[in-house]
Image 1 (spheres, rainbow, N blue to C red):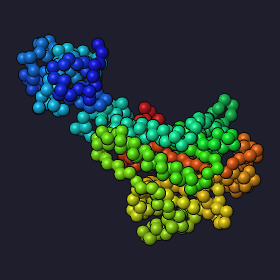
Image 2: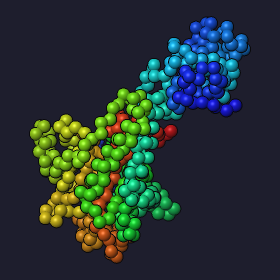
Image 3: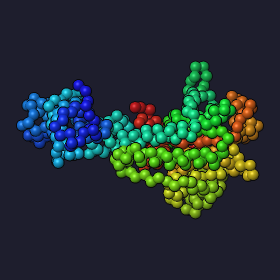
Image 4: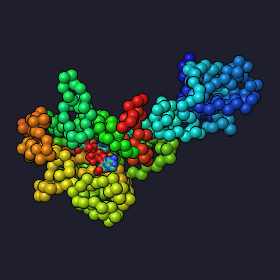
Amino acid sequence: LRRSHYSKDIDPGMDGEEVTVMGWVHEIRDLGGIIFVLLRDRDGLLQITAPSKKIDEELFKSIRKLKKESVVAFKGKVQESGKAPGGFEVIPSYLRVLSPSKQPLPLDPTEKVKAEIDTRLDARFLDLRKPGVSAIFKIKSRMLHSVRVFLEENDFLEINTPKLVASATEGGTELFPITYFEREAFLGQSPQLYKQMMMATGLDRVYEIAPIFRAEEHDTLRHLNEVISIDIEASFLDHEDVMKILENLVVRVIEDVNEHCSDALETLGRELEVPEIPFERIEYDEAVEMVNSKGVPMKHGEDLPRAAEKALGEIMDGYYFITSWPTAIKPFYVMPDEDEPERSHAFDLMYRDLEISSGAMRVHQHDLLVEKIRRQGLNPESFKSYLEAFEYGMPPHAGWGLGAERFNMTLTGLKNIRETVLFPRDRRRLTP
Ligand code: ATP
Ligand code: AMO
């Protein structure tokens, strides 16, 4: 028994043709003399119409016994029909139950009964049967595909760096410690140090798409403990250059998603406008004033508290950069401004009130880097192998990290980051 067609491959023009279709029993309506089975596969629904008078009696009986969400195969003839969804139905001649489903179901894939997010995540494989949920991952797949195509076209080389690491990169508090034989090690927080070390190799432009791990204690709608980070690093470029790459990438992904994911977008009720480039650039000082003007108290020199991000999100629509961050609140590897060293060449890419990417021009001078590591209260000894790469010819360089899930939230319009991950890892969740 072989599938001959997906639901989307059948049309009313195939009237009279025999097909073999496979999928899940989405819905059964038993009207006595006639039974309608809605069969669901990856791309949609298809109606199987079983009139008792026209089909074999045994077949009719076994259709009546079908349980929702069982996996079945039907053989039958396509029949054009104005009343059926899509303008056709399949009149069955053969049914095989490939895998029966237990009843009752932990949640209802037809969404007549709505489920809470925890119920949904507990039974994620069932939740993903809903078109509105699989649509998110069709968009995520296309998003990652077009990120790769865009970066490859721009001469970036894909790399893989270790996720079992010896030290922190983004501040010491958010690390997951693990036992590495006799030693302590950590799950990688960011490929930051490795992608910078690659700049000393002459490979010039690299990117990585891989998980990062953050032991964030808090429980918010935009934080997870494991996320996919899209990272780039490029030599002989500055912060402005990599900001341009980033905004061009955003535009390219949106164009691509519009072109290839129209069904998924429609399922989500989403229309994506291609943003204009260049994105607006706001200096950090200006952002603080905008925040204050909204009545949110905030001092110069602190990171944007959540209330500040929200205030900015009320003023700014779409994507924009916040530039010239205070050097003191950015990591040691960020390049200070030559004329005003208290300001830096770091930037964040925001979408309304959500930070989706951080990046910067980096410090490439060995001695300055050592000094900055010390000034942050860190021990240069623990960065020995990283620092070595800066002693034998390190070009000026810049890069950024873009959170795949947060970027996906801007495309899908979802408010809870958990929805954009198949099996999210948050403070409370380690299974499934
Ligand atoms: P970075 O650490 O580089 O800012 P990030 O993506 O982790 O990257 P966010 O965590 O989005 O940044 O932080 C944005 C702002 O939101 C921060 O200034 C932080 O103070 C604030 N924030 C983070 N977590 C919480 C939380 N649980 N509750 C309230 N505010 C938070
Ligand atoms: P940063 O720490 O800002 O920068 O992380 C970059 C981007 O990764 C995403 N992100 C997260 N998303 C969800 N939950 C989390 N817990 C989480 N943590 C990070 C965000 C964020 O903007 N090394 C630098 C990048 C660089 O300078 O190249 C870095 O890691 O979208």
